[in-house]
Every structure is written in structure tokens, then in C-alpha cells.
Amino acid sequence: MPKVLVAYYSRTRHTEEMAQQVKEGAADAGADVVCHKVDQIKPADLLEYDAIVLGSPTYYGAPAAEIKKLIDDSVEFHGRLAGKVGGAFASVGGIGGGGETTVRALIDALLIHGMIVEGCHQGGHYGPVAVNKPDERALKECRLLGGRVATLASRLADP
Image (cartoon, rainbow, N blue to C red; front, side, top):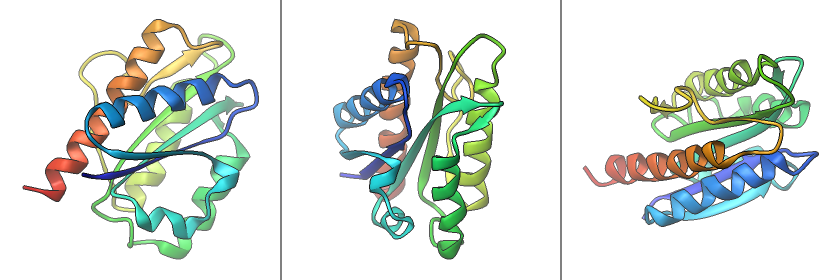
């Protein structure tokens, strides 16, 4: 059973609602899932998980500083996250507000760590993005993301 961490930052609770759906999807796929606000996570905690999913609201087309701080501080463990599974999701205030660039920035950091990120052939190709309060489409995509991440982590752990 893979261990999955869902780490997020949320001011409006929109990203938090998405995080809970990612958690539910991963748990439904058989993972042992922990969902924490980013201020409850230390960079060393990342080493304990088989998969890490990051969620952030979008500010000026980029992740929140709180999520970026975790990523910046994780440089101490560069190379030690290689081979783990990753994923990302974001919320944004309006269409064209940079949600996809936020997800891509999070994915870029995971890839630089050597993590494995699975794309999605339907829905948000890079990861779910909710415009304002997450609608049923966004929540469904979050559950699917959690399930895909958990399934891939399980496959990699038990080839």
C-alpha cells in the first residue's frame, strides 16, 4: 500500500476542498493517504512518502509563496525524492488567471526532484484547475488525480 501525501495551501478553502477530493481518490485506490496544510509539513517529511501531490491557489500566475517555500526548502533533499510519484492541482480566481501555469510550476519542481508525473488524457492535462469554488468537474478531476497517483505509486512499488 503506497503512502501518499497531499500538501496544500488555501485561503478561501477552495484549494482545501480540492485537496480533500485528491485524498479521497487516493484512498479509494488503496493508498494510505495523509492530507496536510503546507504549514504542517517539513521538507524532511517528504522523504516518508511514495507519492506527493501539491495544491495551491494561483497568485499572479504562480503558486502561493507558502507552497513555494516548501519547494525551495526541499532543495536540501535534492535527489532523494527521485522515483517517487508526483501530481499537482490549483485553484484560480478566473478563467485565464494562470491556473495551468501554477500547476506546471509545481510539476516542474517535482520533475527537477526526479519524480514521476503522469499526464492525463482527459480533463486538465497537467492537473485539475478550479475556477473559483470547485465545481463537480474539478472535484471529479481531483478524485481521478488521487486515484491515478496512488495506482502508479502502487505499480512502481510492486512491479
